[in-house]
Image (tube, rainbow, N blue to C red; front, side):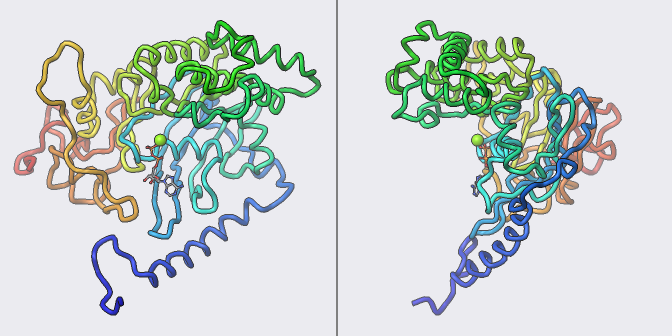
Length: 398
Ligand SMILES: Nc1ncnc2c1ncn2[C@@H]1O[C@H](COP(=O)(O)OP(=O)(O)O)[C@@H](O)[C@H]1O
Ligand SMILES: [Mg+2]
C-alpha cells in the first residue's frame, strides 16, 4: 500500500516511529535508573536555598516528554522564585507548560515519558532544603499534602464519586497527619477543615456524596482537602475555571484569607488575567515552555513590555469600555515537537524587528524585579529614551 512514503510535515512513517520509540526507551531507561534506587542517603537530595526567604526556587528547569511523535519540550529553561507568604501568578495560553511546571514540583509527572531532564527545583522545609529532582519517592510522599499541596481544576473529577465527602477528607488527614489519632479526633479535624472553607452545614456535608453538592461547594471541599495539613506551598491549578463568576470571587477571597491564616505561599496557575490582578504579588508570563516576562503585579499590569503580555492584556475584556470585537493574538503556538531556533513568538509578533530572526533572545532586566525576554528590551536596539518601543534608525519594525 505505502510504497511511496509521504513526506508531509508532521507525518511519520512507522519506521520513523519505531526509531523514535527506540531512542526514547534508551533515554528514559537511563533517567529511570535514578528512581529505582532504594535507601537513597539524605545527603544526595539536601541542598541550600539561594535565598532563605523563598519557599520554592525553580532554576533553569527543563521538563520534557519523550513521546512517539518526538520530544515535547513542555518546560524549557524556566527560572522563578516563590517567596514565603506571597502569591505568584503563572499565566499563559493553554499548552504553554504551566501545569507541567507545577507537576514537576509535586513529582507527579507521567513517567517514564515525562522527565525532569535538567535544572533545579529547591523546596524550603524550614530547617533544611531539598532538591525535588533528586528526592526519592518515599520521601516525596511525606512532602505531598504536608508541605506542598495542590488544588485541582475540576472538583467533580478529582473527588471520588462513590465515597462520602467525610471519608475522603478523613483519609487525607489520616494519611498525612493522623499518627496516634483516633477516628473521632480525625473526624473532628475534618469538620473543622470543612468549616474553615465556609461550609456551614459541615456535619451534613460530612455524610454527603460529591454529586449532592454544587460546583462551588465541591471546590471548597477540594480546598479543605488541600489545606487540611497546613501546607507551606499551595498550588492552585486553574482553581476557579469550572465555577461561575460570583462563586469564583468567593473562592478567591477564601484562598487569600486562608493563605494569610496559615502563612503559606500560593502558586496560582490561570489563563485569566483578572484572577491574577486580584490575587498575585508577582507574575510569571509563560509562552511555549519558556518565561517571556516576569515581575511584580505592578510591573506586569502597568508596564507590560513583551508583545505577548501586551497581547494578553489587550484580549482581556474591560468593564465600561465598548468594543465590537475583542482583540485576539494572531496565529498559533508553534508545534511543540519542532520548536524554531529563533524567538518562539516571532511569527505571531506584530512588533518584530530584523534582529528577531536571530537566536532566542536572552533575559533583559528592566528593573530589579522586571525581566523580559525580547529583543526590544536589548539596550542595543532601544532608542535613546530607553523605551523598548522603537528600533534604531534603519531597523524599523516590519
Ligand atoms: N503526559 C504528557 N505527554 C505528552 N505531552 C504532554 C503531557 N502532558 C503535557 N504535555 C504537553 O506539554 C505541554 C504543556 O502542557 P500543560 O503544562 O498541561 O499546559 P498548560 O499551560 O495548559 O497547563 C503541551 O504541549 C502538552 O501537550
Ligand atoms: Mg494546565
